[in-house]
Length: 302
Image (tube, rainbow, N blue to C red; front, side, top):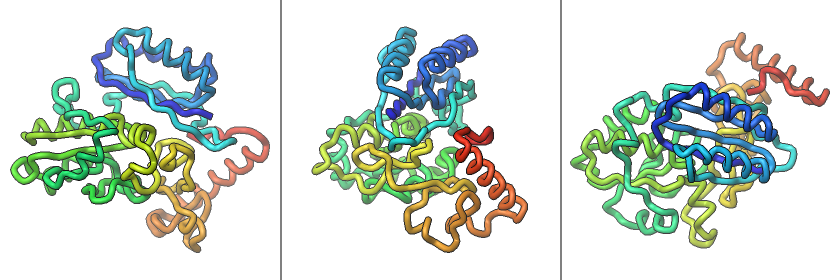
């Protein structure tokens, strides 16, 4: 199973017609995944056969607004559906920062090619910042990067207000999974007066695909927002699983913990939920297990 991730910030009109066309196109090709549309652009992740993905991207790029949109490919382990269904939705933002003034089409950071990223990491005057959330940074990253320790991307502006300033951080470099969050984050920083903002072009996924393993500075796995949970430094499905309750990635050590209950809780969220919530999680897990045993998909699976 091949996974394709793509995005572009571009002014889009006629969103409902575009949504209908893309949904019909992807469904006709047997693809599953999620495509988000907004007036600011498109953000998608699809899985399926390589030929079907190629056909979808070719048709997508027939729209001159989306011509040449970059796409990143990775793989999933045999038997992993990656996505359970197809969803094409219209949203206020294709990645939610909650700051409409942060517009990548008006101001964005300087793109740094994957091949040049290591040299930037070696410059002591550059503050490298991981724009991802805490549950993502916990399983992998570039050593020495500043971790905002956020629970969601909308918390990033608060982190900036507390930890950064244009005077103390004259040159910063941002990285994230595929590049999209860096677009918004860099626009936000530039709007606050930060002088020089770099962003890793194509994000971690492009870096892992482009930089030889012997030269890579990446350590650990990279969290992805699908059923694979994470990919390794070769873009293969990693060893992590995900807690249904708190959605955090779980290591083999977490899975062997006495605090782990499959489908109910894990060491990271033990004590965070009520008895009623845990009972609901347990019943949902039971229903999913029964559906899988019958060769069906449980209707509640996203």
